[in-house]
Structure formats: structure tokens, C-alpha cells
Length: 254
Ligand SMILES: [Zn+2]
Image (tube, rainbow, N blue to C red; front, side, top):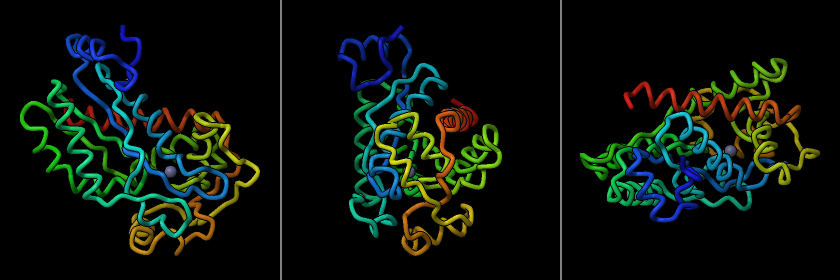
């Protein structure tokens, strides 16, 4: 039994032992430091990534959790103060170096899990190159279906509080705000929670926000409605997202 699944909290002999014991995979969240409305801080996707990667690793089994890539592709949030964004090429370079480092130590699989909507498409475009970097010994996998991911949140909210399902909008919404109540409740300004764009998240909206930025559709930076957030909803959203992502990886033949 390992004392922790978190690679960065392990010693090198513990990593060596984990590898020898069959822990041959590493899950890495790809997060963001970006605006999340008036009621949530910039680090939401980074700390949600920490938790999501751990939950996915537990479900996959024989998997460690690599350090979350905290800053992602957030150009569409730059209209709001504080957001930090890296270019796709920058993110690709970091992901490639993660893969080659882990491959050199003998890990056989790297699972990239975006915890921020803006990282899904970049990960899809770079996957082929990352796979080449992993070579024949280390396979690279990435979860890249953003609409399916938002659908997992909808399912989770519907199970716990069906009347709040329409609050799922994809960003700083009922799902994400509830997750933060579980992960960093000290940072949630619940009294400032207010709805943003509530037309629902679909392919057309995704195309528009990536082209024009969130400011074009929401004045406060929220997509959806965070009102009614709860820890119960949050735990269900975290679990459902992890189940869905792990299942997608398993379906591709882990
Ligand atoms: Zn977010």
C-alpha cells in the first residue's frame, strides 16, 4: 500500500518501489489560472485539477498523480483582470517534457485530464506529437470531449438537485461552484454568486467564446448559474466527472 498517490509528495525510493509494484501510469491534470466570476478565485481549475486527477487515478488503479499543470490556455478569459494564459505551443512543450521525463523513469501511460474548458481542444491537437514523444514504451492519453464533460456535470446535478440542472453552464456555474465548496470552501464568496449567461453550453457557444472571448457573452464571467451550490452537489460532480473520464480511458483499451 502506497502512503500517497501524489508523485510530488513521494521520495525517489517510494517512486521506484511504486514502479516495481506495478504503478506504471501517471494522471496529470491540465488546469488554468483564470477568472471565475465575482464569487470564485482564479485558481479554481488548478485545485479542481488536483482533486480530479486523484479521483481518476483511484478509478484507473495502479496510477500515480503527477503535478497539476496549473496555468493553461485561457486567451478567451483575458478580458477579465488577473487571468494568465499560455499559448498552445507553450502548453505543448510542457506536456511533452512531462511525457519524456515520465517515460525515462519507466512509466507506461500518461493520462492528461483537462480541468479547464480551454485546454480540451489544444490537447486534442497536440496529442499526436505527445504520443510520438512517448515513443513505443510510454502511451499518452488525453480526455478531449468538452461537451461530454459538461454533460457529466449535468447528470450529476440532475441526480442531486434536478431543479438546479439549468444552472449548469460550464464556467463558475452550479457544478463548479459546488465543487469548490468541497475543495476550498474558504475561497468561495457565496454571497456574491449571481447568474451569468444562462442559455446553456453547446457547440455554438463554445465556438463563440473561443473566437470572441467570454466578455462577448457574459458581463460577470459566469456561464450558468451558481445559486443553490452545495457540498452534496459538488461531491457528486467530482465523482461523476472522474467516473466518466476513467471510463473513457478504459474504453480506449487501458
Ligand atoms: Zn473553471
